[in-house]
Structures are given as C-alpha cells and as structure tokens.
Image (tube, rainbow, N blue to C red; front, side, top):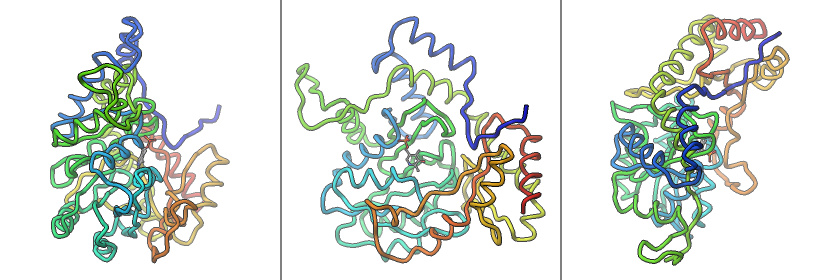
Length: 365
Ligand SMILES: *Cc1c(COP(=O)(O)O)cnc(C)c1O
C-alpha cells in the first residue's frame, strides 16, 4: 500500500496510555485530579517561569492573558500580520484592536523595525508570535517595549522548547500563551497554558478560567468568568508528552536538517529558501517551512497531494480577514502567503521518508 504523509500527526505511546488509564481507573476524568497541578508545575519548570496555568485550548490561554493584563475596549495591541487567527481574535474578544505589523522575509516573524510606526497613544502591548517555532528578535522587542512602556505577550503556541539567547520562549513576556492542540509539538488533544512570573497574573488567570468562583463561598461568583479548564485526562497526556518533549525537539530539528540536505540543490539554485533561524536563537522547528521562487506553492501542493504527500500553505495575512480587515502595507506577509509551503514534519518520520518526499518535490520543481 502506498504511504500517506500528513503534514503533522501526534506521537502517542505507552506512557500516554499509562497516565490516561490512571485517570480512568481512579475516575478522575474532570478538571480535578493530580495531573493538572503536576503538569502545570512541570511545564513551568520546563519553560523557566514561576507559574504555568493550564487551559482548555491555546486560544483561551491567549484570551486570559488579555483579560489578566486588563486590556479592554479602546486599547490597541501590536500583532504580526502573519500568524494564526487566534492571536488577533484574543485581542478582539476583550474589545481591543489588533494592529498588524508586517513580517520579515527571512525569519517570517514580526519585523521589529516596523513596530514603532504602528505604536499610538492607545497601544498597550506587543504580542509576538514565534512563527513555526522560530523565536522573534526578543532583545529588540523588549527594548521597544521598554522605550514606550508597553507590555510584551508571547504567543508561544508553536515554540515549546525554543530558546533565544539561552532563554526559553514563553518566559520573556509578562504573560505568555501556549497551545497543546493535536498537531503542536506536544499535545493534550486540545489544550493550552499561560506562563508567567507574576503571582498576580497567575491568580487572575486561575480565577477567570474557573467562572470567577469565590474562594470563600461556594457557587458565589465575584465577576464575569469563563469555563476554560483543562481536564485531568488532558493533563495526563500533557505530562507524558512533556516527558517525551526532548525527543520530539531533537526529531523536529533533525527533520529540518534532512530537508535542507535533500533539497540542497534547489536551495543553491534559489528555487527553495528555508525559513532562517533568528540570530542567537535555537528554534523548535514545529514545521519545516520554505518559500518557493518561480513555481507556484499552491500548484506544488496539488501535485504532491496526488502522490500522497500532504503540504500546507502558510496562514492568510490577517489584515485580509473579513472581521480583522485593516489597511496598510504588508508586502512581506502577502508574499509569504503566496510563496510559502510546509512539508510533512511529524516526529514519526525517518530520514528515508524525508528523502522520498524530497525526491518527489525535486521531480516536480
Ligand atoms: C495553535 C495556535 C494557537 C492556539 O490554538 P488552539 O487551537 O486554540 O490551541 C494560537 N496561536 C498560534 C500561533 C497557534 O499556532
């Protein structure tokens, strides 16, 4: 039978089954149970932050960061134009306006040189996204934030374990969000977390994710809250995935090296250019992404699909989405959306798979 290569599939092993079975055997299947605090403590330790608070998904984690920072109607938040829609939606959920900034053609991340021109009196925060696991230029971003008195929030949904100058993604901002969606580097099925060093923010996130339940009176709710809780089963999967994360990261980085080696001729000819790591960073390489020149990325996707190889384009630039529409000049993110392609990058792949995929890519280009 011909093999089918999805872009991403999770790796579930005996450890996940063992922890999940523990939840089932003890009937702790809801949001109470030992795996939630254990996973939170382990994830905070891994990220190098004081606290991690789990959530039902990454979008909820982003929403809670906005709420915890008190961002509200009339405020603006800087967001890269090339990211998953959740980054900007979280800003809109609290009634604030995401203000889009164009990206870099090399790292694909927010162009720090174009941030200052978008800062206004209403700007409250800069949300950075480490696209595909490649850390943003954090020195530069923290400098701008300090200069204008803004807070930094990291959307680290694709960057578990990535580092910038030795410090982990998700530990730079005042409050940061992770996703553990099924195709992320580590998964809980659906899930997310907020990381922070601030006790105040941790307590706010903890309160709001559980319907703002009073600590003193049961069924008394002190303000508008949400049900954004992670279940014990999700946390059990998360803990086992976190224990296996070093292996996943090694494999992700290895997969990118394999692609670079097997597609080396096309890189030399300038037909394929890989996303470049930010200087001083060690990306997690959630996916191996590149730009195509002189050949339609969309067409290559169709051709590969016929041979059982799934690819995906980058995101649509957010300034073009009906509910986020915004005027401005975004030449780079427009180009990334046109020329970008993502090849299969599951941690279950071996070098012969990457060699096979690369061979088919070369045949068509
Ligand atoms: C996955 C992801 C999220 C959150 O997604 P959920 O599906 O809600 O977990 C947010 N931002 C980015 C950049 C993502 O890739």
